[in-house]
Image (cartoon, rainbow, N blue to C red; front, side, top):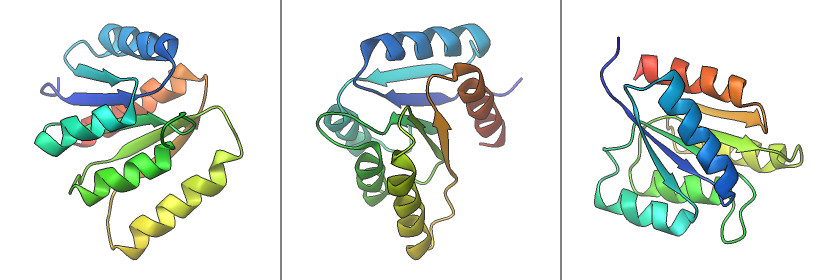
Length: 134
């Protein structure tokens, strides 16, 4: 069994935040989940200590900031772990590819994955795989 890790999930949909928390608690009870409805609040948390979070999962389409813009700001804070964009909109692929290009141009070796909503089984499999490698 791996040691306890911390997963941050950012999504403006409280229902999906609740499902993610339940899924993580049920399937990986050794890990802790931090949930944020607002990406700005998540950024404030990360500004205090970005080394605390082992994995970030974010929605792409949120009213105050896109998931890719949020992740670019996270990287500017010095966050160096992997992340997942959990999106229900196939048009988000363009923004995601731009994010990956930006990370590559900065020579960052972060793993960025995009998973389509509402596939929570695939999301949980990806979370488990990433946390096993951290």
